[in-house]
Length: 125
Image (cartoon, rainbow, N blue to C red):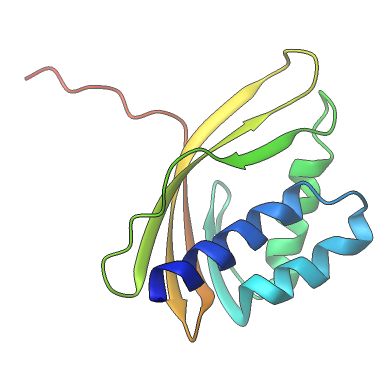
């Protein structure tokens, strides 16, 4: 049950990147995130839905064109933490970025997001 709620919140969060219109982004984020969400993104730490909204809108306005964000893995959830992998692809074979997000859930909403963008290189053991 808890994993299903996490999957739903995560998929709603990702759907904000793919909304048909920027005006739908705040409502989608409000369905997935707590109002005091802490977001650790590529540019550092920010708080609140408005900060996440700015990040999502920046991604939606990618110079190569409006891209598509998809969850490309299952949701792995030990207790209240979950992780999943995602891929962002711009149109016409433009830039592609992949990564892993780690999220914390409180009452079926995401209250922390940690974004790991890019691949981790194998270590030379």
